[in-house]
Image (cartoon, rainbow, N blue to C red; front, top):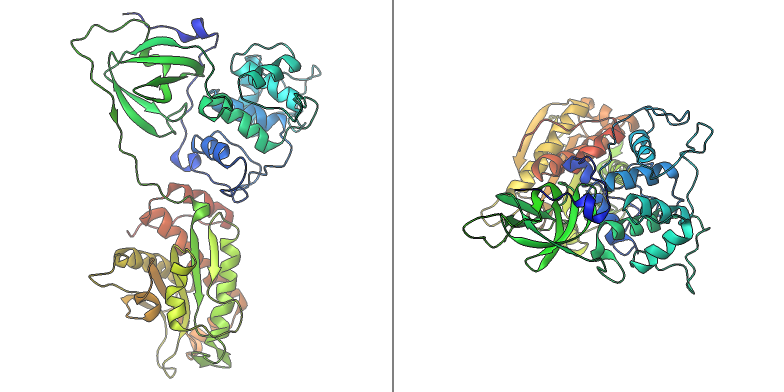
Length: 486
């Protein structure tokens, strides 16, 4: 039974498949909010690891698109080899993040050098140049920037800048490039929907995943079985955009044929259960609760008051969270009094996802060490989550200061008991103990403990909440994930 070669009919060349890690595929950007005009397209590309940026977690949507980034994003989309390589360009060493994509794209005639042995990776693109690159990469075969611009507008990939003008000489912005690339990859994003002609094909393997995008990083939505008919519209590298069983998506083209397999019967496709939709990292909010405040000073010792110490630590924690996609909000940021009831309900009122209360202990100078509390009851859905959070925070505090280990404990405290999200209360040390106070009194040590509690929350999300994308955050703080406890 022959396999049909799509490149023959649709005029495109099959390319080597690119496999990506779940961590990189789940990258999110702190500067792309859900209300951003390109949020859907950038999010779609990011899920398939088809985006690039110069700074971790920052997409820079209004920055100009460079030739290197364009080659890399297009290369990822059509599955060019991204392996570092040295080509014929003196200004594209193997250490350049896009070297593999640049050299492969040049070999395939998608993009060119300047004829003097240079590629000039940091030169910015115009909208017309972008149109021509997309035309070449996706097989539209336009010969000039004007032809390519008109082709993109006919296909609903671009609308132009007004009055029928594509703006070929205008600088290409990164957000607009992402929009055009997403529309080129997936016709569902296009202004006019799908306008391509289709050919009839059949599934030519026992089971075949139908995915949301051209790559295994994209979610599979249905399982198709041998012999089932589908309509194929165009190719994206080694994948095809197709429709079947009332839905659209992508198949790997190696498993389709123009000949209907000879089988007894054809099974109907089945829907693949999807995991519950979870918030992206940049949608998660950590509530940090500096204990006490104003007329309630908390514990004291050697000239220090708990309310001031824990506020200082909490503000330092805030600065760490602000360097990540995670959102952070404090129950107080100044020396004010907040009732226990308002602290306990703060996460619910402010759409929080985790709650971390920071305190310092005291016992007439007779005790020392660190302990972390969680609340557990038969009717508390967050009991196990809270214990896991407390455990990861506690282990990091021990790693940072190494004071006496008083353990992770059950604590029937209002801020834990009344919370609606996983919650932990960290006692960083005994403020009235000479040994512990030496740590508490040191600004450098307070920075260490703030970093420790922050890292504990990352460990919770990475290990317990099973978010592999969190692994990308640690390097920014010269840290690694902790040992797995849950």
